[in-house]
Structures are given as C-alpha cells and as structure tokens.
Amino acid sequence: MMVRVAGVRDSLEFCRRPEHLRRTVKIALTVGIILTLINQGDVILSGGATPLTAIKVVANFLVPLTVANLGLLGARGSQPRMSTSSKKAARANQN
Image (cartoon, rainbow, N blue to C red; front, side, top):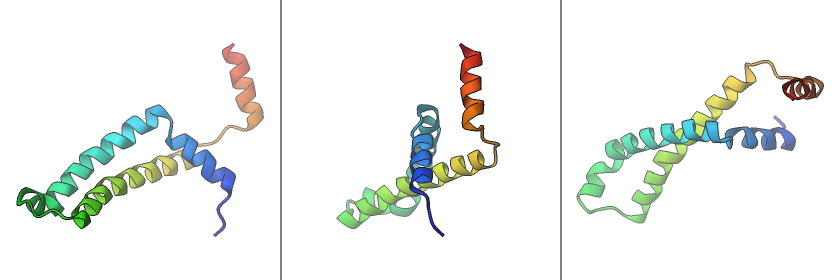
C-alpha cells in the first residue's frame, strides 16, 4: 500500500488542531496512567524501576495517543469531504 505524502501531511495537520489535541491528549493521559498503574505500578512503588521501565511507561502513553488519533482520522474519513471550490464558497458566505 502506497501512502501519499500530502495525505500524511494533511492527517498530521488535522490531528494537531487544538480541539483535537485536547481530546486525544486527555484520552492518552487517562489511559496511560491506568496502564502504568496496572503494568508497572508495583515496580515503580517498590523502587525497582529501570530505564526499561521508563520506556514502557512512555509507551503506555504513546499507544493510546496513537489509537485516539487513528480513531479521529477514521471518523473523519467516514464524513463527506468538501471540495476546494465548496470550501471557497463556504468561506465567501461567512464573510
């Protein structure tokens, strides 16, 4: 499967919108904390954390952030997109 660079760039811009970041970061923080407590909580609390533990904790936050963004993009893909001319017309009507 070939990925278009413009499509990737457009997806990254979409995910970086403040309204989307607020939602996906909240999800990542909530799920990341829960996963960390479940998976590494005992190691951290006993003082046995290692650099590998830190990598696992970071993954506990990055995985839900990635999944939340993929869900966001999937939902976006199911919505009809406006053509460039329709977008220009909508902007003109707003002014």
